[in-house]
Image 1 (tube, rainbow, N blue to C red):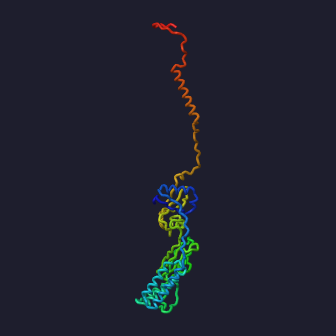
Image 2 (image 1 turned 60 degrees about the vertical axis):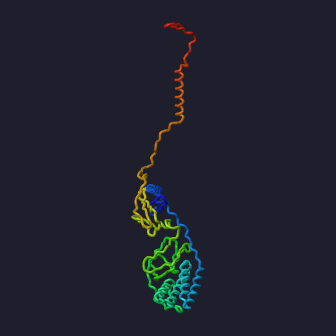
Image 3 (image 1 turned 135 degrees about the vertical axis):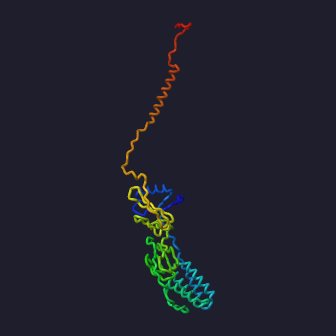
Length: 339
C-alpha cells in the first residue's frame, strides 16, 4: 500500500466502529504500516440517463424507407436505411420501446436477406430469431419468410446486487436475482434507481450460465455501497463483487484494544491479522502520580538577594572602610614608636 493516497476501510463485523480502543488501534496500525486509512465515503447520487423518445420517430422513418427500397428491389438503398435505423436504436436503449423498435429493424434485415441479392436464408432466419428473442413471437407479414423455428431457450443465473435500491427490467419484465429462462439472442435491459433510468443496453445471451448486470450506480468504486458487500464469517473476509482496487477490512477482536485487519484488492483479501495497541497490555486501575512540590520562585530571588548582601559586606570589610581613623599625630623614630 502507498501512503501517497487515501486507502478506504470498512468495518466488517461487530460494533468496532463505536469502540474508542478499536479506533485507536486502527490509527496505530495505519501509522505502523505507513498508510493513510480513511472511512469509505457515502455513494454519490446516481446520474440519471436522459430518456428521449424522439429518436423512435427517426427509426420508424428509416424502416419505411427500407421497406420501400425492398419493394423496389433496391438492395443498396435498403441496406443504408436499415443500417441507419439499427444504429439509432442501439444508441438509444433508454427508450421504453427501444427493444420493440430494434426487433422491427431485425425483421427488416430478415426480409432484405430473403428477397434481395445477395440472398442468404441463414442470415434471414438468424435475424428473425433475434427479433423474436427481443420482442417475442409474431406471425410473418406480407412478403416476410414463414416463421422459422423459435430460438433456443437458455437458463441463466441473474447476478444482481440485492442490496442496491434498483429495479431491473429485461425485455420489459421485472427480474430478480436467481434462475431466469431467456431466449438465446439479444435482450433489452433497463436499470432504474429512484424512479429514473441509470443504465440501459442490449445484452446478448447465447449460452446458459451467470448473467452479470450492473446494478450499482453511485459515486463509483470504493464507496460504502461497494465495500458494504464485504462480510466476515469469523475466519475470512468474503468480498464478492467488490470493485475497489485497494481497501482495508477491519473487525474488532475479543481482547480490549485489539482489532483484526486484512488488506484487500477488489474481491480478494488477505488473512485477518490481529493488531493490538501498546497501551492495551496493561489492564490495572489508573495510578495516581505523586509529584514533588515545585520550588517557589520567590525563594530563588530571596537567595539571590542574601548572596548579594553577603558579598557586599565582605567587600566593605576587606577594604577597611569601617575601621576607625586615628585622631592624633603619630611619631616614629627608628624602631621605637611614640604616641
